[in-house]
Length: 128
Image 1 (cartoon, rainbow, N blue to C red):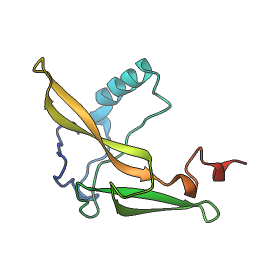
Image 2 (cartoon, rainbow, N blue to C red):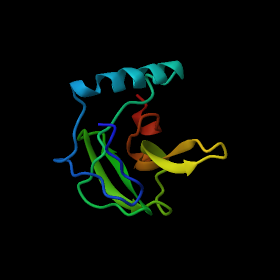
Image 3 (cartoon, rainbow, N blue to C red):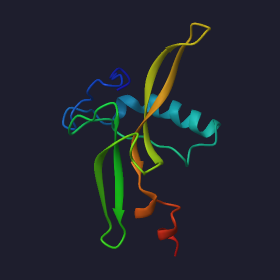
């Protein structure tokens, strides 16, 4: 599904419209695994299906919190510059234009942050 593009500020497909991985993506997945393995990141990063349930403005970010006892997750929208949640956990790639060599460069945008105080992996509240 490499031909679906969305720049920051543009809406993503709805969950119902978004196309998940399928047999047609097997070469893409093999290439991605090879790159992740080459850089020692195979057990660090994975994939998520980019989609939206509602619009999120460019100055907003989704924030995930946990209830460890109830084993639940909640996600809400917060202003990116005002959130106290500083552990990004999901990113999307965005085209940033061309570098000095006229090669198209890419960057990433944080789309989901996790609240360390609510049980993110590595927080003190998850230590057993």
